Image (cartoon, rainbow over all chains, first blue to last red; front, top):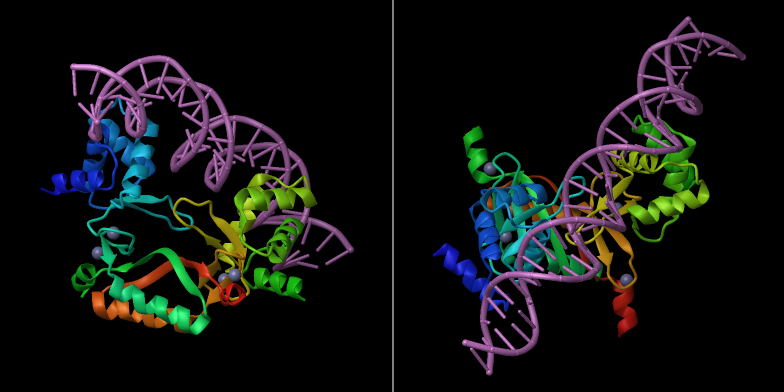
Length: 143
Length: 143
DNA sequence: CTACATATTGAGAGTAAGTATCACATACAG
DNA sequence: CTGTATGTGATACTTACTCTCAATATGTAG
Ligand SMILES: [Zn+2]
Ligand SMILES: [Zn+2]
Ligand SMILES: [Zn+2]
Ligand SMILES: [Zn+2]
């Protein structure tokens, strides 16, 4: 089901489906946490060594265009590629203990942007950020 | 004065002062907007062509350790290096029209993090983000 | 002021991410 | 089924760092 959904989302975005895209989306879909460029390339190459490096990056770009993949980037760290269940641009909570990434819903972020607009006269077009910390599950386990 | 202040901040952080660090900090200090890796390196090399590439990056790292420089990074864009007046880790509003970067004060960000903690049980350690949009000055000019 | 331990520098090689090119292959609309 | 727009793989290239190491400079202790 999930696999079909990703396929559908790719098609719905007007992007073509190819075996390579299917495979790469599958790798991202089953990864428990964001994959680095090399991690993704290696995982893909393990399943099909014929896939070229460029295809991996082009596919990630296509999946980003389709709103299926988000790229996380943090200063001083390698960026990570992440397949998101949430449709459209959004933000993330990244647990530094278990690596789990959860989507930050609009209703949490909206009021923050509203504050920025009212307090600073700054009209927000776009933001891309991830918040790092400890998730509820890991906090519970630490008690 | 500002130059002395940066020097003092470097020393206060337990980092050594060298002519190269002084020069690089000066370039960052006078830049009207964040400099890319190559932009910074070229600007520095113009003032002293003997400075090595590695020294530029090592100096930026030292200035980051001293809390003087922040690195902005956004998926799909080259990262930018920025000398901040605000001491300590903080966040930025980046105007997409004039390039101006302003510091986002803690009182704007704090309640947002508090919401994340209360709504998601996620305890925030660290976040690094920049919000892109149009600053008050540019908005006024557009009326 | 001098000497010394320790940190920093510059040159240059090395690594990793990502892009460009182009001949060949394939998805999919008609 | 066919044609064309699009995607693919090999490979070379670019950009952004990082590493190494001998030479040098810094700041401190005497
Ligand atoms: Zn997501
Ligand atoms: Zn966790
Ligand atoms: Zn700042
Ligand atoms: Zn502006």
